[in-house]
Image (cartoon, rainbow, N blue to C red):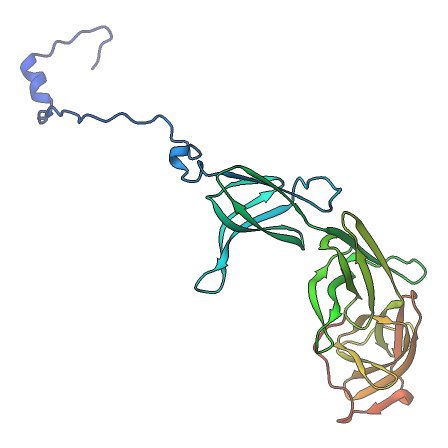
Length: 324
């Protein structure tokens, strides 16, 4: 039993007996540490071998009378001659606007890119500081499209591609930029280009030539003469759509425009005359239809006995690729 305030004296011998036997800690002498720099600056001349080399200041403009571009540039410095692999060695890069490089005396190829626009210049460095302004001779283009009559096209159904203006020996144009979204500014060198606008993924396609001028944004707004249709096979007008229906849309000359399988088929078609074929089980139903530009609508094919024909090998096969 413990009593408050009671002092208990423990003999020294007993205290030593209760303590564990610990080894005696040896005395260690620390080695002498040489003087260390408090902070090693990676940009200090001692840590940057090129810091003492002459400086090349670089800036870029869209045109001679334009201002310096402050952002969005990509700078690359290359060796002037190809290596053993036939490629130019990349020596330095930078991003942003005006920039600088420390380069040993010699010749270099400097390339600056601004979007798809770019310029290259050979620069020779001496022991003196040097400044260069690169003229990109470039502008921009912003693309969009509307329906005939000014109707709006959903942006997610509209895409553009940009091609060179001249054809090669095979009569084809080189693709420069695919899948450009509407209202996106694309930087290009001055010149003429062909743009291709796709509304949906069928045959609603418009081509146009545009001219890009230095220091300017060219806005191109093309017009699609097309409409979006939703197809369904019904037993009577206004009825429920029949599931597991195979769809084929053909031109009047018999060319297949689109194929799909499903109760509903949504498709964007250029204006004109078409043949719509619906296959359900062992029956095939057909309807002629005229697409009017800007008139989106539901199109019903009625599964009547009089309109049905037997399945034959000459009929279009079930398509697996979905419609728009």
